[in-house]
View 1 (cartoon, helix red, strand yellow):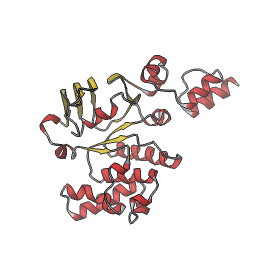
View 2 (cartoon, rainbow, N blue to C red):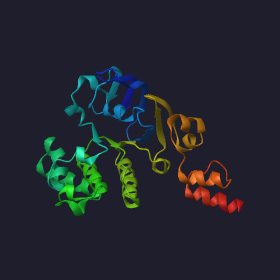
View 3 (tube, rainbow, N blue to C red):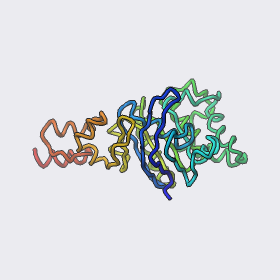
Length: 268
């Protein structure tokens, strides 16, 4: 059985608003997946069903063989950690250290393991220098990494990141890229919601494209960015390097700066 399995899943809010419509997919252990699409496509609602923050109205969601309908959010949080888009929705303590320690301590780990996980998470998220700082004294971009560290410290098999690139500078994007690589090396499964197509093309091989509450396709970066109809349907744009290549008349299979340099030197 796949680590995560959605079988014909829909979700409607109590007022009747349909947010996810008959979505089916699987994610295997150790995969690094991006979910992309227009605002309102159903991306966040979909991932919230993985760790039980919400339960499907119809269909089945299985996580590590568990039917999420049969388990509490607290139980499922041991399987999947969720990093919210806005870190201020997730920070409750007056030091970064206490914030990171909170999750593993609530999971009942002994103190030695709590400290080991705290140090490891702070290192992975590159917030070691801020452990004694009040999170609210830190810039938004750093607060995001504090919440990432607090979820990493829970040592879940699955990690979900909701728009982690928003508000990040070049250094922050590099840290995120390094983090995803480290998680994959550790055998973790990472699911990232993002609107940043340049980040998508560099960091993911498997992409779920959503629009109008449905999953349109599962694609590779090259397949996505060469499919004009799919991009238009999901209200996405090509990465900047592809737009530049098109503007100056280079071939349409350019995805990276290296591709661009090679094609440019060959044609000019």
